[in-house]
Length: 180
Image 1 (cartoon, one colour):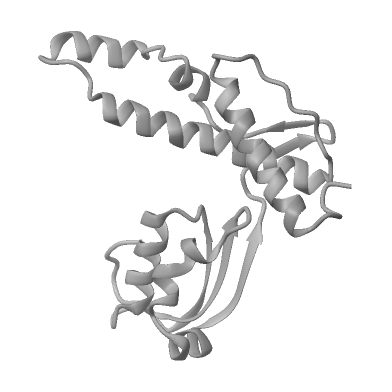
Image 2 (cartoon, helix red, strand yellow; image 1 turned 30 degrees about the vertical axis):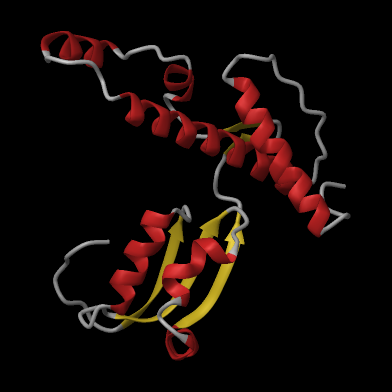
């Protein structure tokens, strides 16, 4: 989103990952008096709850009735290259989860005073874990597969497996026929 020159009124299609930041930015953009979007078709990656939609819900029923034409939860967290091959598109997940510095970051860190911020590292790890688990969940739900999840304890795979298991169990609790 952001500032742009005025456009003619038109419908808008939004494809997005539903984070608090992205939903708040979308709500700010569509409620702005300068927006040119007359009708919205919103597609978000993965299944969502009311919590993710709160910034848009806060705009009120009149806004929803007048401007939102359709919302869908779809599985956008993976790319299928062939019938039996997919990628999650998380380029540096392995490096992040195993705390391997990139060569360019290692050089700049050695020249800069102070240590890297530990909080940023934890937040980044949680984001990567979430993206990997969400991507795997979307692959499994799209292919209608019920997995057997195994992960080595104490490795980066363990929190991914735990989060994936929780998402699958929550989905099965809501819909016992999912993943068949």
